[in-house]
Image 1 (cartoon, rainbow, N blue to C red):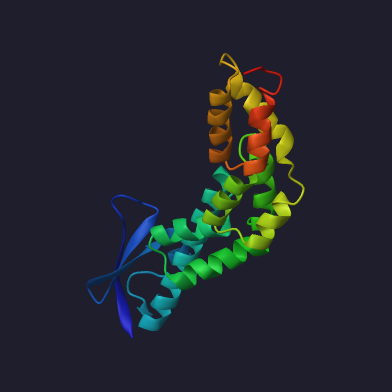
Image 2: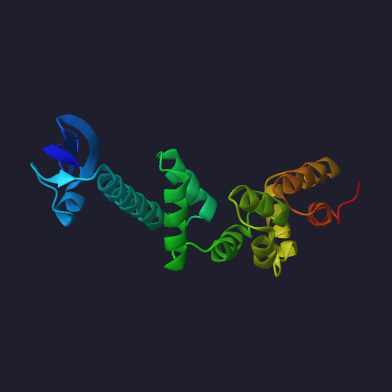
Length: 204
């Protein structure tokens, strides 16, 4: 058994306490955790009990941080995992937090992919959207579902029209437009058709 010899507020965060066992600093705990387990100076505790209490406190901190991240904007599972890991949380804590936020429905890679594809359908081609979603950790199945009904033709033609605005309608401009559309992730055939459609009535 060990004895709690001091519980003092942390200088930078008064909502957290420094816990001392047998005269030596042991760990930091938030006030709510200390109150929940009725930790007080002079009490005798097993070190294993403090380890379990500390782990619960870390889980709650990680969970609250995950909710804060998700409240700012929708995120994929990988993005939340990366942010938690960057904060230094153990893998087992990260795993439990992710499982809980998914259980609550706060993370859905399928829904994220659908909304992402819809938001960028008029600005980017399917190839680029697919690449970006894969980088965010979205599965191939969720990406395929999100892009299953996407039609690049209209978006491609509108971007081509915008590209040609105030430019000479020439073969050279069409080639540059094609390259521009391809760089945006549009299918090569769709990009070529949209670019050269802008000069189909021109005489060279």
